[in-house]
Length: 396
Ligand code: SAH
Image 1: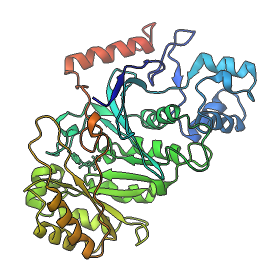
Image 2 (image 1 turned 30 degrees about the vertical axis):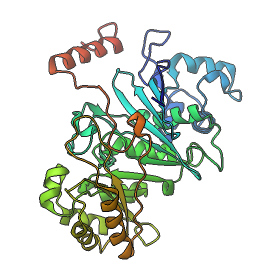
Image 3 (image 1 turned 180 degrees about the vertical axis):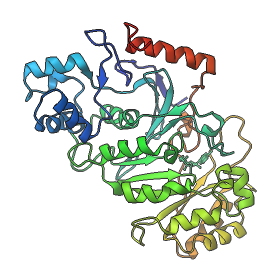
Image 4 (image 1 turned 45 degrees about the vertical axis):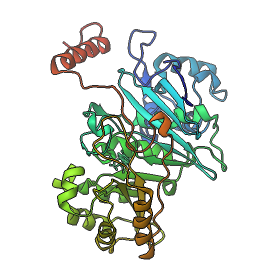
């Protein structure tokens, strides 16, 4: 094995932890600017305090209130009693021989998700998860074999970026030459099925006085949740990638089942109207190459017809295998022929080089062992958390 595996500490997680007075401490990560300002007002602090905190949290990456030397000692002490600065815990950290890094993160309630950093010559991309598990059940996707456990909170989504920045030693936010310069919402889950939290997290990430990754360097990938595509463009303005993978409804219904709800014609209509679309800002169509299933020259020609009204790029993804997967990767010759047809029609059609395959970090290989608790177990956990929040039984 070329990969190095080690269990790292589970220190501060995104869970609320107990404060000095027995009440839960609150995580500051994941609050947007307006919420932070409201919090300062509630505590009788001036408005500029929110801006100072924002700078420490998201520009400097402070993990501890003690670092915030331009805030008074008294303020820091009072704050540390009520709040904490959360990070997801790192359960497993794996380095691939190609430089890709995968983290299995443990969240406050013990659920697990993965995040992957992919370094390239001129940039570094973090692949971020939006849900624990997924509802989509795409037949070629490993995450698709894991039931949806829950949505991630905004804190847990931003937390993945902050954890990676900690690991890369990339605080304060550098102006150029970043190791983490780009974000793809292409990890576990369907980001448009957790739109509110994803949107809140990305607005924090994009804020120019903090982590400051611009919308042009963020790509959100969706399997095609048609009703939210417009909002994604209008509210976030990020690049959009669409997991197409098939050019007929018949095949797409089978391998990307969300197609039964939002068939190709509806999807294409929504994409034609994606806000901000132009030849300089194209939609990326992701297309997994499955041997003998969707990889013929006729499929390539049908693909060109299908996307002809949308300014587009096509990203061919050689299928990445996982244990028990019912597909094989297309042959290099089939992938080359397919790519040539698309290219000759005037589209850029790069083949996505699989990265981090030795640590199961490549597209579609992410999965955690989190399972949705049974109802009785959920009720018990809910009762326990109420008891924690209200130790004196005030909620009863
Ligand atoms: N749910 C979103 C985000 C996941 S992005 C979406 O569907 O777009 C992950 C990308 O990898 C998607 O394009 C997905 O279809 C693709 N993928 C999934 N399994 C794969 C596999 N085994 N090999 C190659 N690509 C895969």
